[in-house]
Length: 289
Image (tube, rainbow, N blue to C red; front, side, top):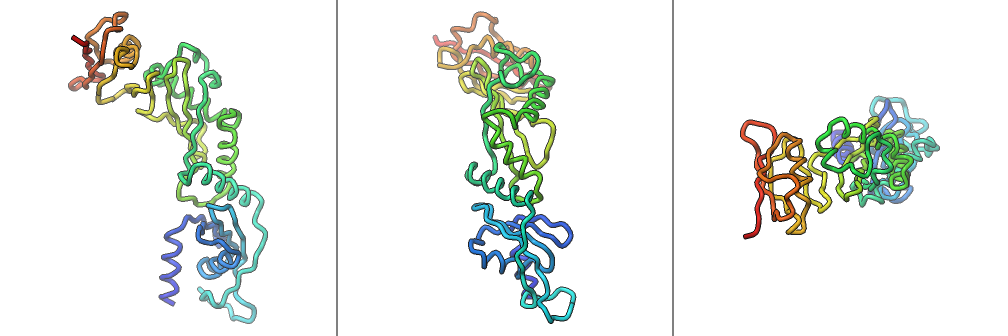
């Protein structure tokens, strides 16, 4: 009995599982034949109604595991006294498993999808062609409004509809996934700058989470945030960004710059360090001799 208990414990500890009462929904990615699914349910899951699924293929079976006819009722019967009888899988659970398999395949097993959306699709008051990633990094209210809009429109945008349809279907089913289905939504502004949000379908929040330090300038440099530790940013002469826009952003964050806004076209690079015991960055420009 101890050996059987040890085998059950080791098998279940390596799997994703959701359990309600005597019903279990469990992932078995090495189950690839009907017999293996059935034997797994009988050997490891005990008395009750159970669903076993392979996340990689979406194949799944449900069973009612019972004591064999003629066997006296007893607590904790060993697997050799049980039989697994196939039963229909509930429709919502079957759809959730199929969606989880789609998500697994579409994301290469990471369960993290990516969608890129134009700012014009946000339907957020005040967001227009002049809005940039700098504005989002600085304005906490704007960040929140964009997060709300993402959560509201995920199912409607062409770039995210299929992801959302499958993600929300998974959220209706208690699959006990090891990795929760998530989508990272990249918002692209008219100037080419970007910010990144994350939406977790399992959590089912009414807003998407802003991802710090994932914002990018038009030339794909990091957008400084509140609490940034500094760094070096390239100016126009080195194929980088307009340092007027960068400098204005640094000042809005409580930092300081040593050049005059409107006169940055000759700047090669900008080096920023944190203010001692204060909020913001101290940024100094560099020019070629």
